[in-house]
Image 1 (cartoon, rainbow, N blue to C red):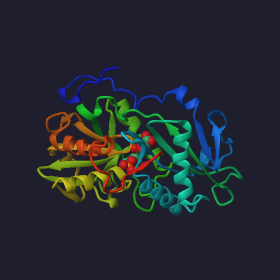
Image 2: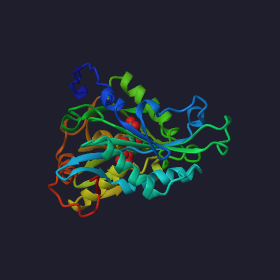
Image 3: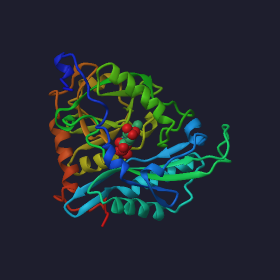
Image 4: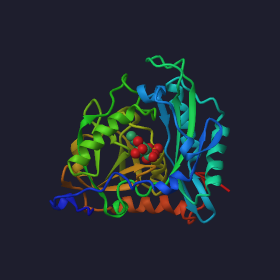
Amino acid sequence: MSTKTLAEGASVKIKPAHEPVSKSFLEHSKIWMNGKMVPWSEATVHIATHALHYATAIFEGIRCYATPRGPAVYRLDRHIERLYNSSKIYRMEPPYPVEELNEAILELIRINDLPSCYIRPIVYRGYASLGVNPFPCPVDVAILLMDWGKYLGDDALDNGVDVCVSSWSRMAPNTLPALAKSAANYMNSGLIKMEAILGGFHEGIALNHDGYVSEGSGENIFIVRGRDLITPPLEAAILPGITRDSVMTIARDLGYTVVETNIPREMLYCADEVFLTGTAAEITPIRSIDRIKIGCGKAGPVAREIQREFFALIEGDREDRRGWLTHVR
Ligand code: PPE
């Protein structure tokens, strides 16, 4: 299906959210489940699994890149730290030390012999009994590897994406904690995403309960005004994105001023550039919002400069002075 710029006023057919995972790859892969490497076909759960009924699951999304020194996991420590923090909030800490889960991820990539992949660890309440009370149910852990291409379409990183502001808001404080990467929060993301797709957009941006910009269904958001990079603060009901942190660090090093502050919706339309960040989405420029053209209507110079720095590390053109890569071999 072809994708045309909404800013040009064209009618559009939008590609599916991300490339379908290759079935043959998946079905030959091993999955880590509660300390054991099991074949894909045996990595199943019972229909009475607590998480299936009550969304009692925490997960992570991590990328392993093909670097000149072989596969390397991007910011593994920060992802595992967030997994344990999310689990702590929901009183379901994994029954494995951090080091064991780290090593399980690396070993899984080795035994599946992958040059690059997307890693999905999940901590969930398994089967013991149903009913809201999660305490009787065991805390199970699994790690699944996937083969995700470009999250928002093949040409998204160059040409940008068309987004809308969603009619759905992100979670209000004291409802579902936004800082936890919980399965429950993705029911809200799903509403945002479905509305966007049915409206002919690649992605939806949610406002928070105060009406300020929050984040995309699966990404954080940045706007550019001159030499300033502005992004919503943690209290705007956002996931504390690890790519967001990488981008803020890279931007400061490049001499930009990074500001975490509330963004009124209309500031999006008037920005020089707007882009999304996430493990899956990496750094994806936005070319239109609510059919209003943003900046030059494709990847702007600031997004480009940050993309270049971001990928330079993975491509081996920059020394890993912050220790962001964990080499698998
Ligand atoms: N906000 C949300 C709601 C979100 O889901 C993600 C990641 C981010 C921000 C960016 O966080 P980080 O990946 O740490 O930079 N979304 C993940 C899953 C999307 C999906 O399952 O679909 C991802 O990018 O892996």
